[in-house]
Image 1 (cartoon, protein in one colour):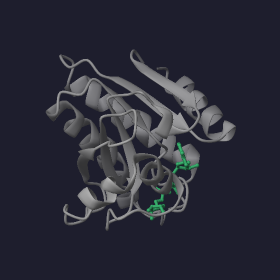
Image 2: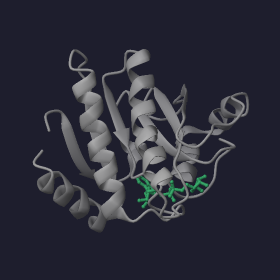
Image 3: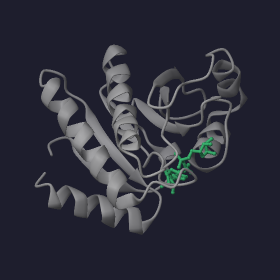
Length: 171
Ligand code: AR6
């Protein structure tokens, strides 16, 4: 897929216009990538998050990036994996709603972590397919808008899974 990259590393080091946080409904921080982003951004991030009224699963909200290289953080809440059809719909919505917000704020590069694949237990094989399909669909629906999309992987296993998923879906 044009303008889509798979990268191995820590998303807090991304120099994209915005990075996506795999948050929880409170938006007040947590472990995993959420904890790493809050640590790197500094305490002002949680102060802004506390004014946002939380976030529903599948939705996305934007804040400033504070001490991060990225100017903005888009916080999205992935589903806790249960194996239901609804999980897949909600996870796809995380990617769509994050991209909609990036476009609304005229941002032209975005880095995604593998939302829901840590604490929330989504199997990487399924989650990467949903992420890639959602991004492809969004790009088809927004052909006029240029945006670079980075899938950030924190393990070699996830990196290999993304490469395989992209290959299997002929992107
Ligand atoms: N950079 C990129 N990816 C990372 C990083 C990092 N620095 N750290 C972890 N990952 P998780 P979830 C990967 O658990 O499953 C939090 O407590 C990680 O290897 O961070 O959506 C929130 O507050 C995995 O592949 O998010 C919520 O309560 C992926 O990021 C809950 O966890 C997502 O793992 C959300 O769970």
